[in-house]
Image (tube, rainbow, N blue to C red):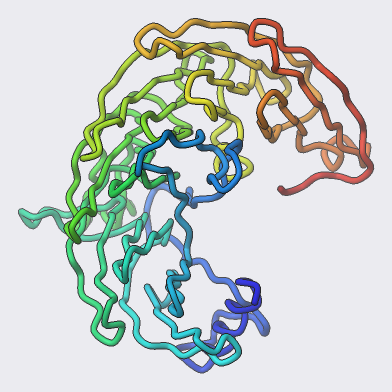
Length: 397
């Protein structure tokens, strides 16, 4: 049975549970509204570009080791149990031995915005954004958390521990027994204390007064949740690709450029080591399809491809190719200027090809969408291989 059908059946089962005042008839997906705060941005995980057969898109083919890159999601199927992370009802565990009659076995409440989850042998490791709570010393905290939940007995789900991360998690991957998360800290105050009434019940927990991108590692080995490492960089629009041994991080700043940074994660325990970086022209889009994760490619673990926007929203794009064969000394192979054909272009890298399509048609009144294919087989000389205009206005991907 398809997951979509199974989830629809489960949500139908849940109709009688809780209040239906805010749900439309037939609605099968829900999203919690953010509590009062300065940031209205939400982050969620999704698919990444690239990859080989059986390997999550956006990841390099793993070497002959036990370390592989795994995607996370809001639901996981393990054996005959379905684990589903929901903004209203928290973590729910279902018995789907009979998929036509799923049975709710237990649940664990979670307050915040669900981002992602992975399940290992009945232990669910969940990533939550927009979470309000306290630090170990009792001081207020607002940000993101990684929480471990022992659901081996679904009727008695226990919290194994949690790690508090700065900012709002935009994306994450799992390598071995470590989850790597990229967050964006807007450098703002959050919470009820920022409503202008002088109250300060919950203070902001920004790690800096300026926008920053944060990469964190959290180990869940041996059923223990522990933050291992964290690195932060001034900027915004954090986008990353992950291989079994490295993270390629792209972030933008006020210079109109994108910084590409190689982070060594070869340590199976989760330690992050900064290696080389290089600034390229154009700003990577941190919005659009899956928070812009399609605009960065590092599938082979050696060559980074990045699409950046040049100038304002009416500017063109820059396709940069950077050689990271020596992670400590990256070299710019090429920078190809692409004429403006629309706003918020979505990219799809696949081996030696780039498929590029902007969001247009509706905005310019043409009712069409341009589609371009670029040949990347020669890193120093990428070129346009073909283009076609398709009917219809592309509004989402």
